[in-house]
Image (cartoon, rainbow, N blue to C red; front, top):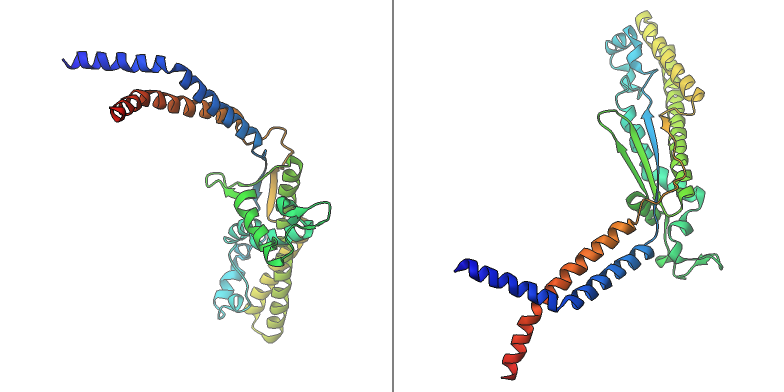
Length: 294
């Protein structure tokens, strides 16, 4: 009994679909065409990637050996001077700086990227914003937020330790230029900070050296001074102070998105499903109209 009902149901479904095949074809083609048009109207996005290896603290205070042990016996001299005896935080500082708002904002201002990032709001011929009210005009803060959410991403591979900086933009050349420049700026910023920090530390250590006559403490301070001088030498002698570029960003020749083929196929599938659903609903609608007339 159930088998007969199922057979009749399948026959009815097949008959209904065949009777409304034109509707199914039209709906499928319409959705396929609409998705294809949408795919071509969507802006193209290109991706440029830089692969980086964070540079370790080669001249860190861990190299002090006995000097570090001596310092710990003399009232925490290093910590009082703002000195860091461990290099474990350098990698975290480097990655944080690479994706920091301060670095990004300085980059946006120096490169004058506001008209590029907010192209729809910019009148290129008049070289001014389309909206006269300053409250409605893009700001550096808004540009940094957009850059962080939609343009730049920084990720770290926990297994290899490698860091990847990715730039996604509609101009492949700009994407590559931005990626490489951001890495160079991060290296320059971290190198400058290291030099300034070491110079402050040297001033402090030299001052402490003049205040003490304890030979052991003098020896420990000399060790720290030597370490800070090494830090300055390393910073001054390397353009890749914080990140060593393993694979620089290149101009992409193939867009990353939109995936036009995939969008078109999905549109056809959606159209087919909706067409079938509309066709199967036709008998129910016909019965409802018949009852209404009766």
